[in-house]
Length: 472
Image (cartoon, rainbow, N blue to C red; front, side, top):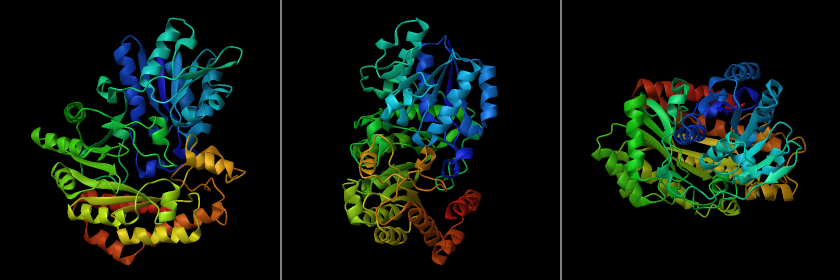
């Protein structure tokens, strides 16, 4: 079979470009690597339409040239309309091309997804085992009823739900992402996460998160389980990135990088033992910070830590089941700054229970924290989350809501009209938050004085451009 893996376009159809950067779609890179390992005779092509900024016309040209038998498309909720259009294009080229979608949206809404006219199969949760099994089953012309972890429809449009597939217990059993299939030169981090002039890349060292925050799709996608790769496996991939691709700056996409303290310390010490000249950024919770770990992280090349503070209101934090005390935010930021590591933070505006007063509390906390960079996202109730179910049950969704409005970063109207806080006011407060945070004279002066390299000058320039797009 000839298999095409496709990342849909988003930037030119309602979103803002990757918070100012472009990331390799690791999910497709893992999918391609596993399929290639298990079925080496399968011809695999990838098409990152978002990364390459392809229009629908260009996408059609590429698909016609590739002539795939099957197209696998990753499908986040904000890009669902784009995915539908691509599937329509595929079927107009040939109704015999099998369309398979996977990722967050099909996992949360599998029946609704497969009910769409031009979608044949939905892969739920992790895709490596399921997608490879699906390809093999189709090649053998066997019934799709034997493939665990999918919804599919037959030639008569009957929809079938297969039993779920077990999660992948041993992440070391997966080959490293097939970076060689992607145009690596097009990827770059946002200005908020570039820390050196080294070539950059993204990685994961674990999957999952032990918490059950109401807004988080990650806990749903990974079935509320945390699994770790071995430190040796992670280090071997880092060395491959350095030696094969020249990548030496890493953005770790783990939901909670420091969830296991001893593992983090082992990771840092192994970086130093192997004498790896790398720099990296990771995401952690404010209640998973201590001086010993931070000291190890800094000595191993950690240059920035990103926190999801989410709200400056304890009431809102409790509503979203964040399970953290508000004062932990200031304690954590002080510790990280003391360790000589830069800080990034993010908040969400427009959660259940939000008022203009709680948003004001959030902005005030952001300014007290004074992180090197700060993001104010629109709270997005993705399908599959408790946040979504609560918003739906209470009738908070806008009547004219579109899937693209679920984007965390865009200038679209937010998806919710909350009591006393309509979507227009949420958007107003988001733009106000950005202006208040970044236009502080003290902050601006510190950024200008703090420029020590060409990289920092470029980051400031690109950050200003992104700010101007967001502030309205």
